[in-house]
Length: 319
Image (cartoon, rainbow, N blue to C red; front, side):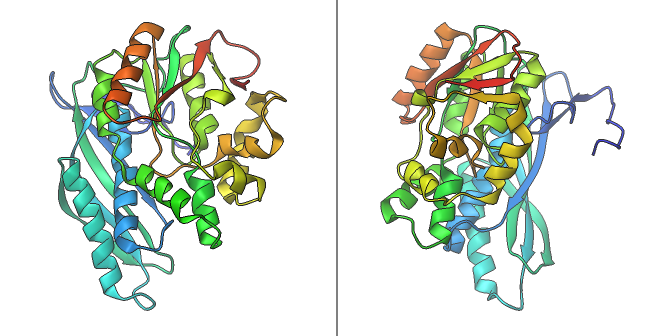
């Protein structure tokens, strides 16, 4: 997209300048629209669960902006010659149930015949123009809170290879189908400076975009990262999605990882997540209160995983 001109408009509050999670367009003094689109290929065999995961993944972008989903359109690529249409019905049923859980409604959608199955949503949400949470407002001294455990990409890869423990896989699925609505609502009460959701670029990729946006650096503490059970073992066995290595190649030059972090586990930091958690930056005192609030609401894995520091040579350091 670099050769293309950036969109400029009086009502365009958030565009593509900082690779934020969604675009925001103001329609009145009290309301702005949050708009996003995302779709994925299957990472589980059950079509209903796949629909739930894909929908939760798409809805997450609105929550990351501090907004609430309003409407959704289904986006589908379906191989009609190789799969029964009942599979598509169950995918859409899973998505519909998750959309309803979010308090939004489905307006329709678009389906094309495709050799590879894909499903996701175009989502429109709302947010007050003065309460938008972008990925560029972090300030020096902020703590960084992550609301879901890492490792969904690696565990999904182990599952595709037929090597995933049923218990480990179920924990990953439970995480991926869970909306970020509770985390977003709790975040909004404590004055967040910045937020993004952790998806395809992995923790360090999305964190790097946040750090660039605010002109500062982030320091993470590896021992404080919430990581799904089984992730470290599968990473050591090479059960790693190709996207993790792409993320490592792209973002790695701007990242320092201490020798204290085991070599085999470093790739977890770049693991592309599906329907991952929110990464939230806010001052320490409200951050600690937010953390307690999240855990009281059942988000037990929520953790303070790092801090925002002055700009250094590396955008991100992991100790």
